[in-house]
Image (cartoon, rainbow, N blue to C red; front, side, top):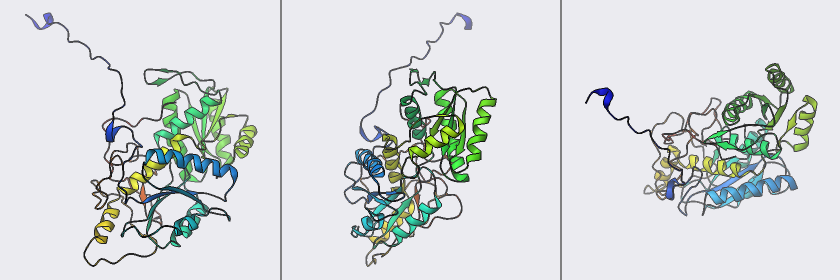
Length: 363
């Protein structure tokens, strides 16, 4: 039988997708031992009714992702439930950090960073401060959902591709300086891949960037531009977003607020911080004979550039956080950080990379 006479090989058949059970059931699901540090959200600004609604919603989602972990929140300013008071209520954790503090921010903020450092430094026991939440693929999924809620994008799917949209182009706007522009740019690329539409990036802190990005989209033939605020809420109000949209003739989605993706991403940041090799060193030193307890705030060096994955003594029961896709390789996505942040950018954490690409949340 000649080569051309052979029966053609059957084409591969797409099998139905399923959600596996066990430790790999989801990116954000963590399983931790009882001695794991608490997770504390640092909420920017003073306490308010709107901020309380957002914070409690994010805490609920984070608790669902970290069963058994104590999850709290505190404010960086004002006279309400302040972060420093929350941290003061923690006790010694046998030499391990008492808490991982995750700022409820997408992008860095100089004022919030200073407030966070002051609050953490006032604590009696070591803590770890994580970086802000962005960028990450789940943020693109959350923005997609917010756009669809406002009638500015449809969530119909064919296979894995989101199609059709009420808007012809989208402007992703974050809050902050140059790093915020970088975060917005990364999320814009991820959102464009979901919507199959032109997406530009801008910063609410730079009105000129909003104007320039809008003009760029319109020069490309986009007549209806939707504004997708890549902002959680406490640091920027819906009224502020509406004013920006009205000034540029844009239709807008609502803030991310307590979208489940924010709580899930908070859990991912927490899990990544627990993988910091310096935490393993701290735990090992605490269990050495004659080891002294370390008072005050932890000055844990960053984990940038350190290969391999952490083997955390005393946290041997930790599962789930070793498989957090999407954290490494995205700008500004390092998880475990020192309280006093270095001036340079942190490298990627020693997180196992998945074989496939990270996916956003379903719209």
